[in-house]
Image (cartoon, rainbow, N blue to C red; front, side, top):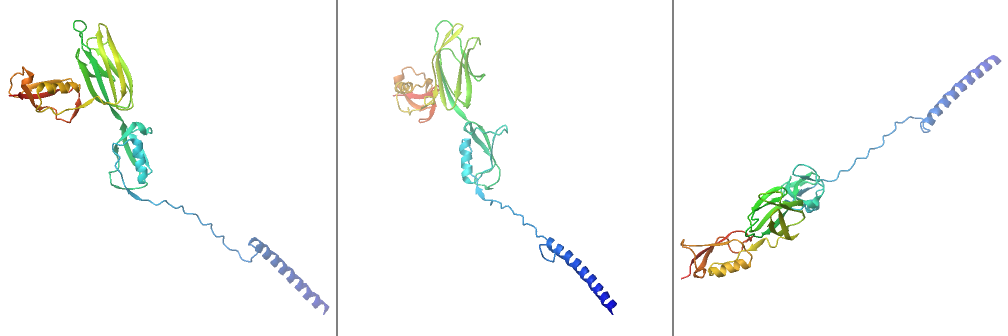
Length: 296
């Protein structure tokens, strides 16, 4: 009987040991799983989706002929930001103050996305330069003509003893005026100028053998003396018409009769027509031809 009791106790002890080992292993697993008896899959962290700025459509403005900086400002005010400025040879430019817009890659009034690239093709600003040269006349010696060069290119030949005027357009920046003897380029005068706005250059010249005497040199902003308004002369006596034109400093005044007869006594003729219409602004060296009719 005692043997049976001992056998049963041994069996119960072994069972308790096995149960203890099972429980210890299970608790270790629970500790690894956060204290629960079950393993759960870890949930992924959600990825943030960047928000895109809304895209709008705007009517594209006209900036042709505008100074580059003003054009960029106007386009930005409309709603565009992606603006590229290029010169006519394709190079990117950054000095807006010296350029004006010649072409734009979008038409005026076209509906354009706000993030689309805007390309403005620009050229250097051009200004007017008025040149006036009073070439004094020599009666006997040194009566040669002059040649006028601008940046190394021949503009005109200046006849001896005549007053010369010329209105040209030129790029902004540094330039050179050189005056040579038409017969000998060793005889010359040179003037360097910086053109930053429409300007006037004038001087007086006397030719002296192997040198040019240049005086009264004037270079200043403005071309106010370059263009003179043509008056209405029709119906006026020829001497009065000529006097009025000369008072305005016109230099090239001619007249002819309407019947082909020579005009001998000016007071016997009156102006019936003029080749330059009244009110037009012309260079003072431009030819004016008055047609006259007999005043009787």
